[in-house]
Image (cartoon, rainbow, N blue to C red):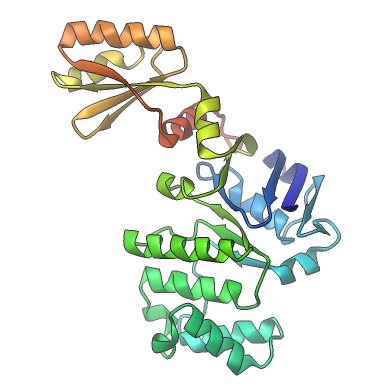
Length: 305
């Protein structure tokens, strides 16, 4: 059973097509990653799915409800966490959650708020003003507000931007805990380590969905070859490699280079030639999700240009 199933979604603003025939599925209880560069259409797609925007073309069902006609029902069963912290900074954590509980018509309000505070570890800070919270605690408050009405689906739009690594890890531990209880999650992110914690990922670039699958599937289907270059004069090696036939990417990683390309034979010849000329060492490495991410970006055209 799919929590999200959309087909051919199109959303335009004026003459700009921001979502361009996107089709995707997210199974119940799945944590699904939504990847793509800034301006790629992730947020707009999420807003269409949760009933905030009506598509210009395409069809879909979210939690069994039609995205065109059942927007109110979808909103009641979805928790949506926006990119920007959107709570009243001059109210306390408890006051903000009380306001949200009343918006959802939850009863009794005080008991629901207390349970949510305890569930997310916020009870001891309940009187602290939201505006004085650190990024990690603001994130926790936002998550609490999203799940207090017990949604079946969480839509998280870059939820960990600007949050320290410890808070990010704790956040993801919480998300996996919820998913094990049956909650479905669609999360947009720029962090490759976060994408790798998802059951499946979907890569969108400038409105077009380019890939869907598990992380190993997406890496395999990209059909890239990666060489690790180190030792010798890697600065000169990098300069020579850039622009050579078969070389699509040259990226420094500490004291080594990652050299990536689609044409394995041409890439191997280029790397061997530069190794002979500069004295560097080379070996074939594993292609990373970041390598694939950069490759997709380089091949895509900005639909807003």
